[in-house]
Length: 532
Image (cartoon, rainbow, N blue to C red; front, side, top):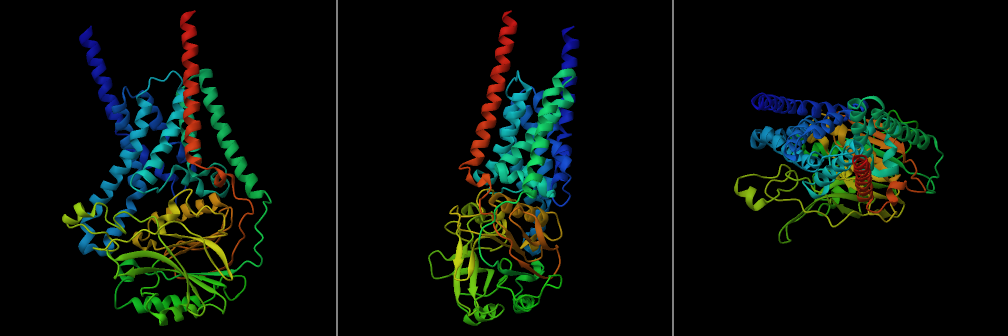
């Protein structure tokens, strides 16, 4: 009999391990919720992982399930990173596949390690387990975004960007809070499906409350007449999208042509604009000026000539100081006056690992690796976020490229900024889902801060949103042209999420305490039931 039991147990063990291989398929299915597809019901897919963690017999099996699920999700969500390697295919093309797989493997580890704890506890309360699952999912997002590899891309809450109403939840509880709500919703859906009889009633009701409450708040906020900041006459902003392919962008023989293209487009009104008003501000994308603005006065004069007297040009260009030791290279945003004077410069703070700097250069440099964007010289991070203000220019917070992906860090926190300016060059990633995801996260920063967003992207997606993240004008991916928009006003009172110091930590602490309370209550009930 013991032999039969052992064989049954062995067969069940094999079946469980075979079911693990369904995890990467489920993880890839979760990527359907990401832009540009935005299939919102796909956010329920993590229910598959939650149930697998409940069934796992120990944390090691739970880690395996979570890692495979996360690997499928990150691979389907970040495949486009490999396209960047082919901007210089001769040097980096062979690294595309191992580079993507390595990144995805690391992201999967950072996602799976916290979630494995769900499998390490013998839960008396599955409701407590669902709360712990949601909290630990968010821990993984924070670890990989800030304390891990500095890659906060694709939080679960990005799925809300597919629709304006659900996206407003970010204004109430922040990006991490919205991810917590979605992860808990998925876990509750799993419990409602798994349980039988009256036991499924509680998770089903809680799930309906989450959906109804979040959606209801979103529609209320969109329709509410929230007070706007009193800023006087809003400026007319012209966004320039040059649509220059990455493999041509830094060709020395072509850089004058690209510079002239931006000058010409700056003088070209948006054909779809309601009126052909002269812009007060012209915004060019990241690294749109291939010359040193500090050294070439003629370049500054040409830039300033595209706006009326008193107007401003906001653009991306590199700052390089070869005289410093070591040499300093910044990815910067400049504000240039109509007379060519440089009024302000912001240096990018959050740099792209392996793109703008080579981590552990002493080690990787000996292996012959170089950063994709700069080769043997790393970019230098700027000091901190800042608000740029100049005479006649509404104060704004500049964000360079993927700085728009960092939740809770879109401004310097002083409350002075009245709009966001995101300059970027997504040509690295071609026609893929990457630029759509990037634009969605920039919109999340608009909702999170209650500030309008102006986004200038080299190849798209360039857009303008109002203070609730609703797109007012857009230039699609792969187009060349301009957008002319009267800048929407900021909200007079920032959203609640901006008032929460350590908002992410508060959300996770509340989730953990709720899970602990539900578990202790269940164990107390079981204790007294056994005693009687």
